[in-house]
Length: 488
Image 1 (tube, rainbow, N blue to C red):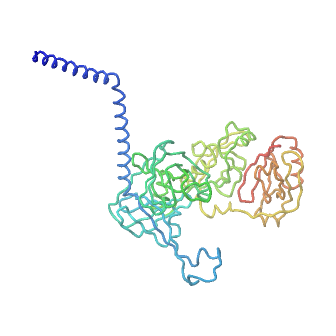
Image 2: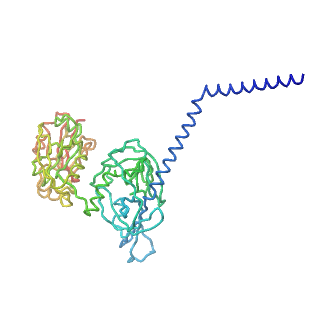
Image 3: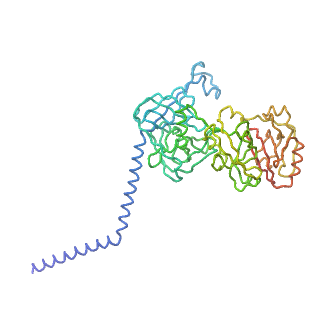
């Protein structure tokens, strides 16, 4: 009997084990993908994490900290406050210090950084990732792109390879490395927020083509590296945009594309300076209003507002022409033309296609060199108010003008020009909305020359019934532009 119960128990136990095994098998068959997918996601996440760590560790040795020192003859804060006593003798020199970052781009010690990091520095000290320090030699700077090249005497340095910034895509992951707030080898991660940012006025009269990123960039990051997920150098961190007095990161940082920086670097190392092409015109982008006024099919190209003595004048380009192609390349806007001309070999002859009075013309032009001397032709002018003559109706309502006398032309910097000087702008008028101010010189109304107050008065009356009028204005700030005034 006992044996029978024992056999029954064994059989029952075996059956229970089979049931349990069947349940487990059924559970696996019902939801095998859920468990597998969870595990696979974690594996991929860990793999991505390890990949980021690997490329950062590979890149860090190529990023350096740059300390600069500059000796001033006087206290830079003198005059900001008055103290009844002094901590320093007035004859003693005043030393200032600044901090930035840099990127090693050659094994023998060439380093890329920003111009403002080392500008006017008396001493440049480079600290490597392994804590070694070197005095650096300044090779060259370019204030128009904010690029500078320095060199240290060292061998077999770790080099960060350069990528192709033209292939960089918006939304792509990037990593910024530098020394913000003197915290060396700081790494932040983000994405490419935009490309081709220009007219930010970060570089005065320069060539801006920035990569925008939300990878955190702070003071001290300037000159550091922006790398892609392949560990390639794609940009040189340069500036941040803040919402007020704060200098801290707000998620809007800018880097110089490495393709631009590479060309500048090679020129500085080879020639000690950057040689750029110059066209000799004042230009503005073609807006919808200008395109409509000039009967253009597209709002593209560069509208010529002034022609200076030089290549453009010799080629026969005139103000009010629209440049649509330069050296075989279609022109998008003002900045696009400036960059193409700057990159064109000095002394070469290129074809320039323009639209003049609705017709396309092609003119040969020999490119000259952009120098400080030729740039002086576009310097700022001083302003002054004068006698008043005002318009009360039409798109020109609210403008007061006076004749341009020889004395006034000399004082305002309008010698050799013709027009009427703006003496009054009514707040809220079409002219005020367009940015016209006292001291500006109106030279044309609807492409008709304005040489006197009588000309101005007659043309203003003639076009007073129109809803919009185009003026050619020589601004007192030193720029020239066509301006559209719209009736209110």
